[in-house]
Length: 311
Image (cartoon, rainbow, N blue to C red; front, side):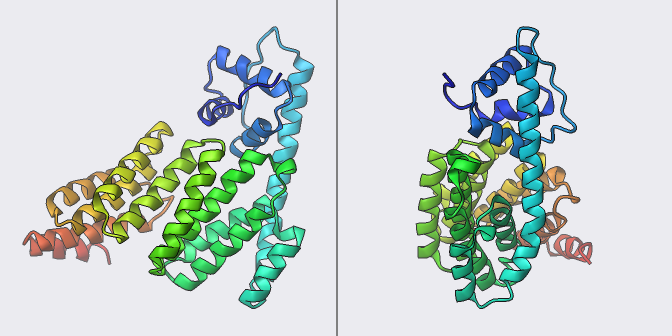
């Protein structure tokens, strides 16, 4: 009997080689019992070419090696899909918006994990440069995710991807000032992610997007609560950079509420957490927001000096 699926944080420790012997034994026995979804989850978070985990002595090493081989094969397949997705995206964008939707609905090459990942990423990247593009790409991500084969990828993982696609659609609609549409997409995302793996990273992203939408709706107490939950999830993952991003969003909420002093404090904290290599825009945004807070507090010379440093 396979039993309940393994917790994402347990699999992440296993992938890093940081699990205890008892945890490793639990994971290997669960995987060897035939859980395809947990194997797929592990393949998505681990690079087993750089991962070494000592197998417990009482476990069948042949079974363990078979599991590792299967996960590596799954991993190689994902990398192939991601490589193909770039060419597929280029082809897709040559068509009109209506034609794109028809292609994604009907052609299997657009209904892959790699295509879903790329559509979500492109929607997020383009949301401020062209809000309409951000919405269109997120809508295509939803269509692609709806076409994923749950038998191939794992039902709960597909549910996660659908939830993430709807979350990014909510975010894109918010940026495009479609708050009603954003609310509908966010509700869909929350419902889907509740049925998925429970991955703390997905939960954190959902709470981040909830923060921004609630702020746009001027529902500030709810925005602050969602922000606190996002920070808690990223703390579980020990992701300092993303905690910094959450503090940046929370500072923006507080500034809209008129609390510029507390906003300044959070912006200074966020600057200590950012990794500029991951996203160089975030420190610039934090400094620009800090200059605004300083101006509102009457510290114009200090704000001018802060802005001068951005050039």
